[in-house]
Length: 75
Image 1 (tube, rainbow, N blue to C red):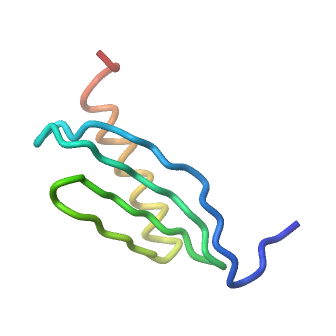
Image 2: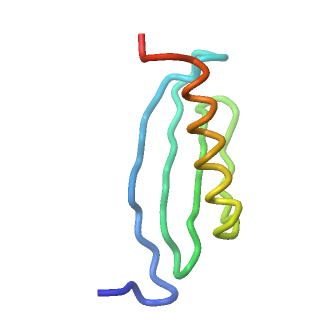
């Protein structure tokens, strides 16, 4: 079943500790219609929500994979 064009679906909410500031953070991934939304929030610095086009979403995924490979296994 496909979502309604204006329906918003939260796919993931991921809590983390920001490695730079030590503040609590939250990453939220959602789908709204045909758009993928990404929210990044840090407790003491606010948040940003963006809805890039599909090509940029693919680029973000690829670059995150590249960056992750560069820092090695979780430790």
